[in-house]
Image (cartoon, rainbow, N blue to C red; front, side):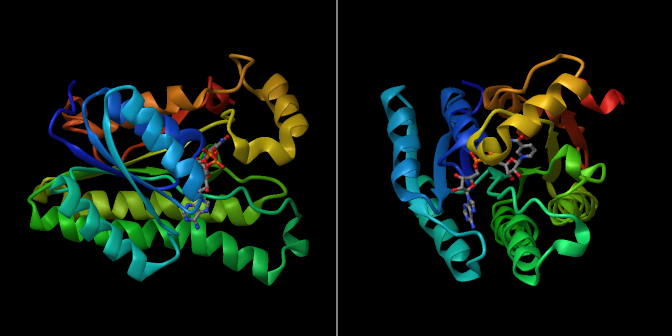
Length: 248
Ligand SMILES: NC(=O)c1ccc[n+]([C@@H]2O[C@H](COP(=O)([O-])OP(=O)(O)OC[C@H]3O[C@@H](n4cnc5c(N)ncnc54)[C@H](O)[C@@H]3O)[C@@H](O)[C@H]2O)c1
């Protein structure tokens, strides 16, 4: 129970990595503010936490809605007290298209959710953490934030941007008790891959030394490590969690 008396906010917590992270945080003792645009599945995350003896509350939240982010943070603090941890995880996979075929709408949607959504959340989380004298944030980037990503350039741009935000904020708040890190998952078995399962299986066979996809629980454990005091001297780091894919 290393997170006893800690409060954590997770975006995109209805599914995949966000749900696994919420469950892992709660298993370690944190009270979890579960947020997502998918209400039923978000409430299911809360039920799973409560069935396992943990504490959680669900608030609907679209990370492109700046006003709603502020409101959710206020409600979360009212419910559980100051927020110590934030996991900016909500994201979409985006359209598969070569650069010359990317539409304005697809570009804007990707930036709105995967990049601006992280920024809007960080802005409010950091303000709250400064007020309560500290905290720890983990943003979910991707291996596509470290490399180009053929046929999904906007996703790669947004995830590179998340790393820029992570490193900049890490430096800004390093003496103010706030650490900011990112994880860069490789191919991880979650619903985001449903539209491209066969392509991703082929990528794993060709490029992942461990020859398997990651599990959301494996990403969750690394996120919890970076949030925890065990990582007290780590800030501005982007941790690849990829079965060895980055070895080239
Ligand atoms: N699965 C992978 O292979 C992989 C690899 C690298 C990075 N990631 C990143 O991990 C994060 C989680 O994705 P996942 O794989 O668990 O997929 P997922 O589809 O299971 O989960 C994404 C969650 O984000 C939510 N969401 C989408 N748009 C939202 C919005 N506007 N506001 C709030 N919530 C929103 C969805 O409802 C969903 O619950 C994403 O940022 C994704 O880009 C995933």
